[in-house]
Image (cartoon, rainbow, N blue to C red; front, side):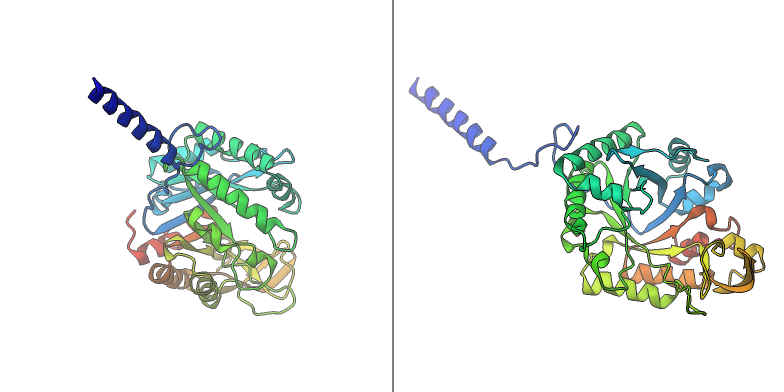
Length: 354
């Protein structure tokens, strides 16, 4: 009898000790039982943003097969600190999701700021634990209810100058824990190019690197309205940005995605009405083999516009393959849908089948 009591004592003691020793993270909002697990990476990322104002039916299926991540752009943070869907979308989230699913591409919810300056609602929401929790609950409900694969955060931009570097970091960590509960959903973030020192660049702290699955580095829009003959996204910008994040900041190469434009910008004049899509440039006689063309738009006649043609995109795709882990396009609807396609050029270069 004593042996039985002794055995029961050992079993109960073991269970108590084992229970006290568990260190699973408490479940995130609506997360249920489980633990935080990094979801499985899926190779070289080819990311295409799909804005809500683009008609998804105008984008051929093959373009969705070329990309393995489609980001629906955008749901916005609103004045209440929750999400708002696009008011009058040409394509709904569900329509883009279904086309992505059919063609084997993962679908992420892109989130940016609905305020006029692009950061006020993010700033207000992220300022408190309660605000972040309310936001994340709404994000998780949206992701689950729409059967999505992940979220892309596009806060342009947190800064050390107003303390949003601290609240952005807290938001990313908390959101990551919720999305990564049981390794179910992915988290990506669109971040500054990193070329210029300052509060915006420094707001992206190294401590968030483990929490984000990959970073879409916006290595474009390095233009000037006063100086002529300036390419806004040349190879030098790509190399500078990758070198900063990979070497200076030690971002894991597996999480580094190089952003490239499917549009052109002029230099030395206003950007209002003079920025053209890649297809618009080709429509005015621009060459897919060049990085500049003479065009007319926005009340300006015969001005030079600078863009990325196929040779430059191929070089960037290979650079990203050799030093990082992906290439991102802003945005899919601006690209050509034939053999002049920039996304096609990138896929052919890295050997991605579609």
